[in-house]
Image (cartoon, rainbow, N blue to C red; front, side):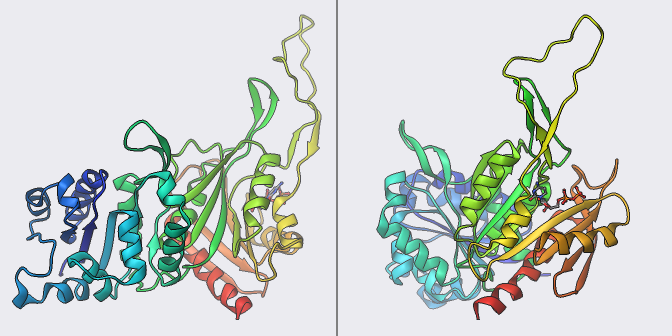
Length: 404
Ligand code: CTP
């Protein structure tokens, strides 16, 4: 079997050193990687490093090995092009179709998926010129990963950091695994909620649930790899923020509702994978609830939390918005699932069976996706990533139908 061919474009930013780690991950996982740095990138990491790590020749411009027509061949032969780091200058050149070195030529000749992992100072990222270039690239089908927030070069911090190499690798791996040439969620904004809410009783105790958040993270990662702008509303997962995703951290059901409704205002699809507590303590004790000498125990009164999924479904922020719910059932899984789909009013309901040793915290899942039009899609036992892809596969035709 021939190895998938990946072009790793490197433009001139200090984060170029992190691309060495991305290169190692790509080669070690069986990809044939051709590194195409820009001239500026070589100020940060030299050609010898790229050549030694990739096992392939490295050049920056179109005048070497001219007989092999590298400015056309490298792009044409690629299964994936990933540019990491992508500077503001590189995004501008790519958006405008400039071709003044080997990398920009490669970007014009590539017909495979193209991923940009931007890295720059916050001001440069937020500048309308850069934002318009990013929007142009996304509209044309490129995957532009949202930069991470954190320490930048020097003492400043903010949005603009290159996501961790492992996360960029994960986006590339998913795209190559799907074998698609066009990211089919490009230009879409999707919202995913993940994790489990915690409803505080007092400063040290809460009512919670056992949701790990893995399914929601798989959904967010899959959507990002398919080109969507993703907002992940995360509740108590303890997991690191995934690459290419805007993450909003929440604690309680009420906070989750607020964050989801805000993000849903311009969303094409909302997937409620979070386990939202149906009840919360009626009273929050500002001091720790203490034991009493009479041996008695306090009674905790509960009140209902808002049902976010039902609210989203009944009151769609946009006419064509697709709303997806999850149902974790312990008994009569399908019967309860169908009733829940009707009750909540969503378009799709992913129903899975949960129990003491099933689903919670595990990397696998088995489910049936029920649709409001009566169709049922069974998803066999397998990784949560596979279920995530199926959910987006089912969301897509519904998006197209409505926006047609
Ligand atoms: N959900 C929600 N708001 C709530 C409770 C649940 O948005 N207050 C969403 C979940 O994110 C999930 C779906 O509703 O997508 C199903 O949640 P589940 O708790 O299984 O359904 P319930 O309606 O609470 O039914 P049950 O009586 O079985 O608990």
